[in-house]
Length: 229
Image (cartoon, rainbow, N blue to C red; front, side, top):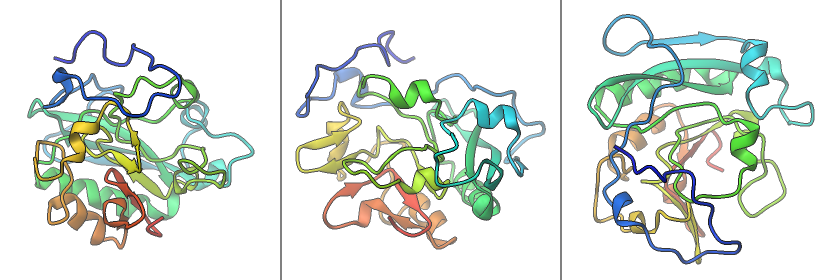
């Protein structure tokens, strides 16, 4: 079970070099699904293209985003939780890659790769003060690139972040999520971590997507994108 304080303790302003709390160093939580289970057994998926208006309304999309609402598809897939149980999650992705994304998560299901949670990012979540312990697998998020002003590939629905806590972003002293520093030790492979020779990189490579863990000027171990940006 996750600690009761997960997601509630706002970090001090300007905090960068933080240690990982003992309760998060071997993170294997599964948070409640936000959607009803897809019927059947094994891997299942459902794509609604374009995404329904009510789904768009609870996302970060607005008219200033670089993609039109009708260019986004609502993808639901089953996945393995860290509890070794079948769960259902959802993503908003660019319609042009919806079928390929389903293929990736089908491969991850076959590989029994665990995820903590898969949900669509809301405005409140995007704009909330950081707690440094988030771990939501997600895709569309209308925001700029980390540390920049141009739109992220997430704002086009052409990127996916997977298990961000087990696979953090690192550039200099900046680590995101801020409490995930222990997971920068990529030699200490724990459940949910992405490795260069593992099933997640292979699954995304099969559809031609690049991995931020292979970048040179920074490492973004959670990040996969259609144009490798």
